[in-house]
Length: 55
Image 1 (cartoon, rainbow, N blue to C red):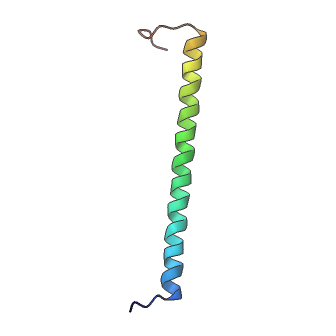
Image 2: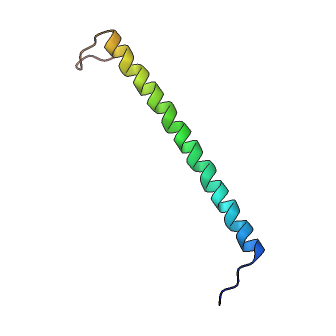
Image 3: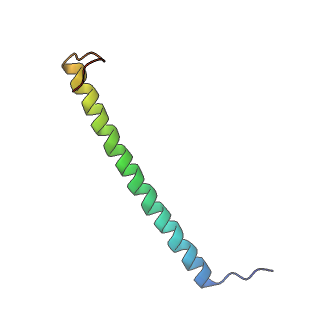
């Protein structure tokens, strides 16, 4: 039978909190990139830029 200690549980909790923080940071970065890309696309649409033309 395996023994689970409070220290083991606290360590696992710490690991999970770190994973959550990293996931939130990654999601925030992705969200920021999505907003920038949407704004760039909207600008191209406003200026009626064809696909062959750059910003």
